[in-house]
Length: 149
Image 1 (cartoon, rainbow, N blue to C red):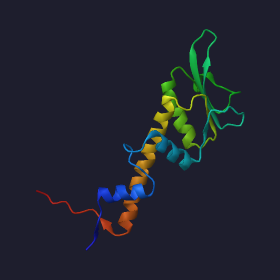
Image 2 (image 1 turned 90 degrees about the vertical axis):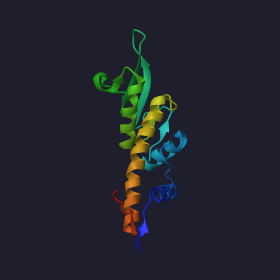
Image 3 (image 1 turned 45 degrees about the vertical axis):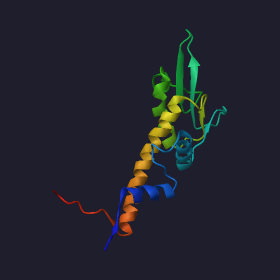
Image 4 (image 1 turned 120 degrees about the horizontal axis):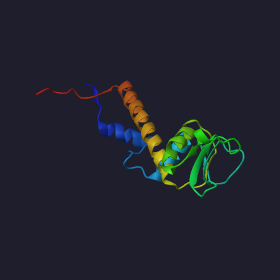
């Protein structure tokens, strides 16, 4: 008789390994897991040795724009400047995945930071879920057979 694989078993194994369901993990937990996984630090202390920078700037005529760049000395207007801060989550997520640490943020509590962290956590969680299911199957667990009606 084989061992029965269930969603509950997978979720419990995930929790035992420190992975909470996306709907149960708060922002602080997700941030810790993501930053630990990629060995990245977010900082609001400006330093010339940061791996990536995301900050606001004001144009000559008073508009607020946002810069997301590898260097503050060599900003490419067409690639590194954003009109809306809501678009910065993609740049931040890429910088985290590329392990460009530390990452300077002039506002570490901005909404785009939470959105980027959540997006990465969901991706990592799904990958870990598949990994745990595969490991349990290797240990002899099987999904119950579906009876057709």
